[in-house]
Image 1 (cartoon, rainbow, N blue to C red):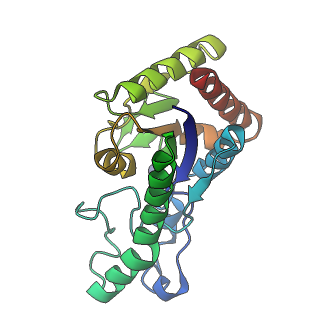
Image 2 (image 1 turned 45 degrees about the vertical axis):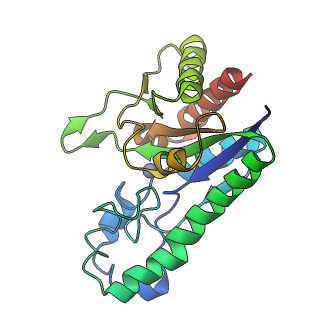
Length: 232
Ligand SMILES: [Zn+2]
């Protein structure tokens, strides 16, 4: 079975469409924060897609409108700003942003697996260095379902490859979140069996993004280089 690679970026930007700008007036600081988007994730996703020669599906609208990485029934699908908004607006957000994005990715995977391929999906994210007063002690997180052997094995190899090329990096599996918690990959696992779908969320500490320049460029190179080794 051949592997086909796919890269997605659910939290790539903090854009607010004109129809919703009034709703977000006064919330500029929140939009600019990690709550509004994943700083650095889009650049990481683009570089991943280029390295893997893979298609990239991305969103640059803010997760504070509707969170593409949560299931429709999740209580925080909408943010504290859009949850109290009229139902018609919430439906419009779902119909214009959420469903088309999720469907496009799902259809791509369905086509690739129908062609006999196994899909390896990398969903690129970044996490805030400190959440609710707690310092996250990792540079890179690899999120997967431990019950899916293909995901477990790829993450183990990825972590091992990084331990060789970047032993100083703190690379943790299923941290700062568990791969099984509500998210797009968790949804796709229910749709596609483990034999044909491998879904991994790559989480990078935003401290590297804010450091910027050469350190951030090097981190991206190391993480992607190690993934290529792990996929060999
Ligand atoms: Zn994210």
